[in-house]
Image (cartoon, rainbow, N blue to C red; front, side):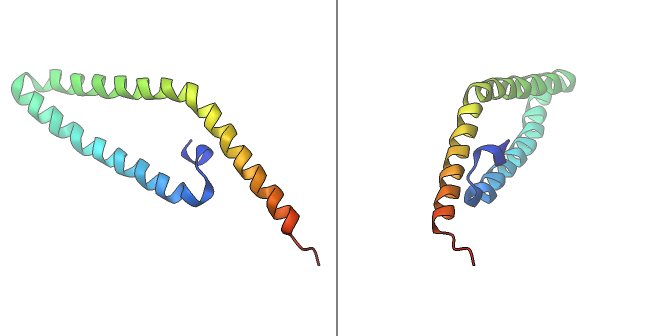
Length: 93
């Protein structure tokens, strides 16, 4: 999905940000689980952390339903214009 809405020259950075946030989430969840596990019970803490993570993911995916089609179309228009410009300046030998 990141590649569908990111200009080609920015795709490396976009993928890096996606990986950074994925790794941050993977490292914060055990910390939250440990803190909550000490406060209540480990079983309850794991369920709570999982549910919170899935709720956040669900909200973000619902937001994507409304924003992604517009972003995909915008990128297609940008790439179409770039292609037209290249066709105008291309020399065929």
